[in-house]
Amino acid sequence: MTNKFIRTKMVCYLFMAASMMLSSQVQAFDHQHQNFTQVLSEVVKLSLNKKQTRVDYGQLFKQPEQLNQYLAQLSAVKQSEYQLWKSDEQLSFLINAYNGFTLQLIVQNYPKFQSGKAESIKDLGSFFSSPWKQSFFTLLDKKRNLDAIEHDMIRKWFERPRIHAALVCAAVSCPPLRQEAFVADKLEQQLDAQMSQFLSDDQRNTVKVSENQVYLSSIFKWYGEDFEKGQQGFTSLKDLIKAYQGDLADYPQQLSWLQKQNYSIRYLDYDWRLNDIATF
Image 1 (cartoon, helix red, strand yellow):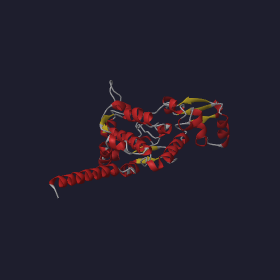
Image 2 (tube, one colour):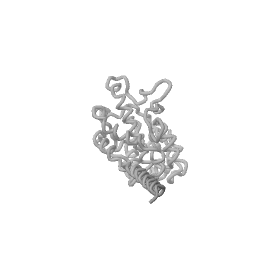
Image 3 (cartoon, rainbow, N blue to C red):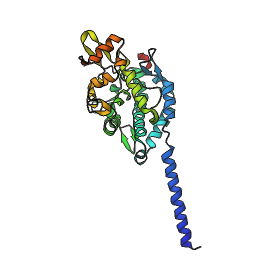
Image 4 (tube, helix red, strand yellow):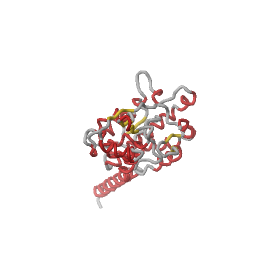
């Protein structure tokens, strides 16, 4: 056996080992996001009517280790690895990243809320930069901010308008934060459940037959265009209302009225206070 043959075999073995290591790393990411689900299940509290949630930031502030570990796992994912995933794995990853890093931003600044220096996530910004434009974490090999995840990644890369019921910016008027992470193998059901729960909450979205009005969250004013592009069958907000009219209506007469679709849409004021358990 010549030295050249031995060297060739060694190179082949090394290449195979490197390929196996790379394959192992690609498969190593937990697409069930179990660590995040554990965090959420412990600190997200459901209202008595099961339509709203709040976060026990005090508990999360005292014990942030598991959240930080999970977010470190997200930050360790390379763009090249992410690109190998299925679409629903990618989107679940980004939704969880947005919600997780939002939680981290609040926890990092929680003393300001405790002291009364801040009442809203908006108070964490500055004259020159909103909190959503502060680049305080790494994601897919780059320093990022929350706006980048929402507008430059999720809204740009995916045609899923129901994500607006899944991204939670830590305000009282936000959609409810789930008590579990979003996962690829049931993402559609989770997004559907989110929109259903959000629209059924009459403090966020409501019907006024006497006024011939449907009052929607301001979220639908800010992102109404995403429901007008034909994505997932929505060409207008009335298409969205039609799809979820059973959640908006409190009784049969309202449902019958909604089905006529001769109402107009107005938008409710947004409550930017922190979605802490103290605001239940």
